[in-house]
Length: 132
Image (cartoon, rainbow, N blue to C red; front, side, top):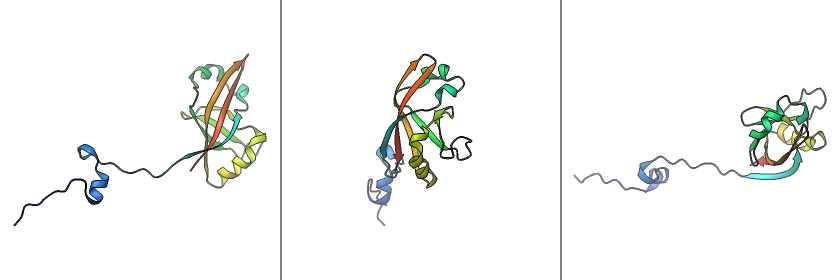
């Protein structure tokens, strides 16, 4: 009987195993689609925003969460850091389409594009993206 011969790099096993035999699982195709430039609204109402500001950096990812039970705006979208700290909202004038997209199951998020302190107000400019 002949010896069992292993063929490195052939077939499915070859696709899933990279250099040094490590398992490499292909990731699904994902892309970030830029939608809109806006600011974070309501930062002056967030307790501790001045202490948090130095820890907010350009290009930091921000998570968006719908807040349909919001007393002031049923289309409200709260903005949090990736650590879950609330920094404000998508402005009411901009949130209708974004809220509808999120309600339809689309994943939206933001990235900080610039920030500045104006007295006690922290102005945070963001770019809104759709995760496809």
